[in-house]
Image (tube, rainbow, N blue to C red; front, top):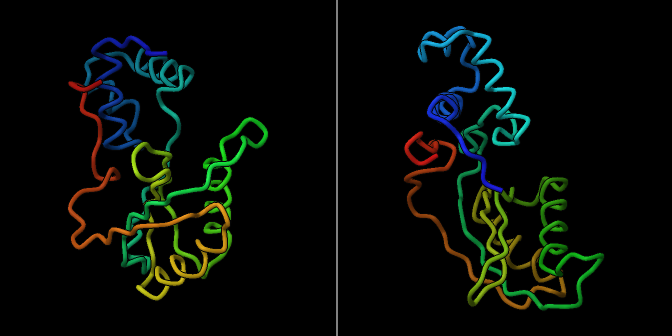
Length: 170
């Protein structure tokens, strides 16, 4: 369900995307509104789940993850499991494993898609050996994985972490 926002809501979202730690008093000053108005608007945006949370954004490359790849997976389709598609179940298993097992790379994003492949993973590996083991040993251990194709990122140009949705697009 789409939520209708006025200009103040849009500007608040824009500012908070750029700096979620900005002080309410600073927002009130920038937007020329009372602090109570700003606080109640932010609470409304949170309640309507337009703001899903606040977090620290970590530069993963500084933690030693130097290889970025997009892994496309063609998966065998089986009957839904507890109302979820086999692709969802496979993704959940991969995410759980990659979160818990240090020898596996980190999967930042996972999407079920249309086209020649069923799943796309955004994968950060510490090195080519870690990515290779993930592709050659780990993924084939899942019987649902029929085939994969991997795109290595040669140059990291822009990230969703560095972008925000400007007020004109909200």
